[in-house]
Length: 140
Length: 140
DNA sequence: TTGTATGCAAACATTTTGCAGCGTG
DNA sequence: CACGCTGCAAAATGTTTGCATACAA
Image (cartoon, rainbow over all chains, first blue to last red; front, side, top):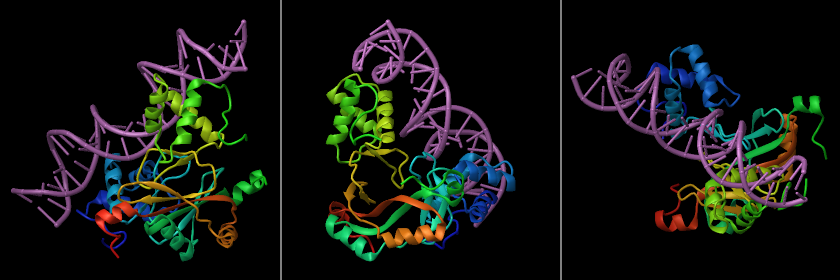
């Protein structure tokens, strides 16, 4: 493992562009969105290069993959701090949040299952402030 | 919304077969796996019918979709009780578990984000007992 | 009978891979 | 100057859809 945001392998303009775009993006973009933004910075980059670089970054733990409940596409999150997400069930916006699950819960799961637990993914679901304004709160 | 495990629309042999396979499956099968099992019960069923029926069941909240960290395929879970999952990072086995996130945590997330929170997905990651036997526990 | 459900195949959407040539180290 | 990286296009993967026919209600 190496420092977050560092690239393994060669230092090319394409890889630097992908990493830079990711660092500036806080909206959990898809590979296609990242590609579009990279093209704005460095025209001519191929989609395959973006995919390959993303895979590289995921394997190197420099970015996180995000698979939402009803989407097939993979989203990417360059926030390497331990954190969770809240997804709006109407507009789909994804917001970072910090919501530590108590150790007692994790310990209980380990005891019940016999698993050696190394981490978890926690994704809240709901209605964002903007959609509450436009559609009202979630019906009770 | 209708009773869990009930089908909307017409009552056909194909739909009954898909539902029956799902009720007997506790290993969170993919659509392809479900299709294979359905063929064992009712030969000739097309993949599209399985996909359409699964979509119907998901929309009717009779089954849950499961998207794992590093898989593109969708898995299905007919357990409609509120529950969470533990995934083995080596063999990929998925086990159901009950691990309630404290209301205080959810409330704090709502306060911080302004979201109206309606639920969450919690997925633990780790090493299953069998893989611990074969590979040892996760390195500290 | 009437319209929904099915099976097939083609269309789609997304990601991965093969390959010839370019460029970093 | 060797080998990894790139861009393009084709392949692979997984899911959805169009259409003619079959069948539940």
